[in-house]
Image (cartoon, rainbow, N blue to C red; front, top):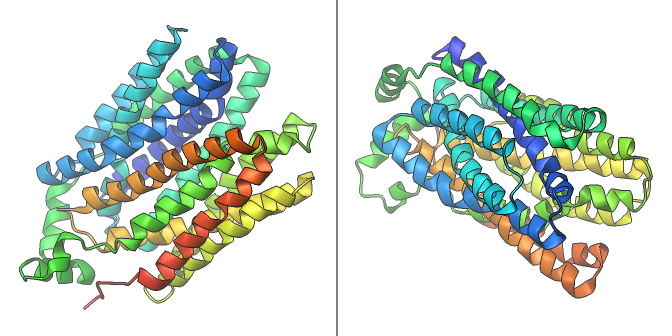
Length: 397
């Protein structure tokens, strides 16, 4: 059951707009810094700030939102902050100030990320509807890569943040229409209309030592190692493609098609996932990431890169959607924000640490491809962790 259809649709559209903006910043921030005259070391340090903030803030904000039982005020503050940040980026060209602004962006982005918790509560953890959320995130990434590339090509990168500011103001309007039916959410939970949640509520009154951690710790380690191994490669994928492709249009298509394919795969997975196959989906998703790294090493043409871009879309969808569904269905309104934030923190901590490790390998070997061979081991570790340590703890009664 959807507890608020109005909020359901406005959250999805808001997620679409924000993630298109976020993807545009992710794709072109480094080129914008280069346009301002920053050296490569400064660029690398500045673009590393965002995953750092994504490690620090989500657990804190998730826990606070659980304790006060409010999500929407954080979402609203987050979007107002994003508008302010984008406005400031149109006013300054100072690299130190930009670094501070990006750090602040990370805080407001973490606030805005709590809309995923509110969405899960509004759709009562329905796996099909949760897959819609993930699909809209991916579709936003596709649109952001597409329109930002066209804009930079036609107008120029100097004016990109003006465009993003406009879209961000529109997204703020969408968020004003979102409602948080907190009383209804809590009453549905307390009346035991969800079997899994009813079981958790009963367990809360027991002496079980697992009650402080209803989510298998293997989830966090697997997310960390996967992103440690593959996220740094995705960050420089356009450079790797440029070694073999002469057309920026081809590179743009290959980068943008990844989230577009994810959109359709995630919707499909939402229709077939269940407690019996959730672990199998995760294992397949993680192991495919190993093959993707090998694929990027051996690819030397548009079509070979296209094959492995399709494969990475499938790999990401297969482990990410089941992970979100698992966490949503095994948490309560009292701890959902904390545990969903823990997953995001593990995700971005892997990106941060993996990026530093990958940069170190490149500085040693002076070769992207040699460094990539070392990264294969980490998604393999994720696969083994889920295979041997992941368990479905709560079954429906």
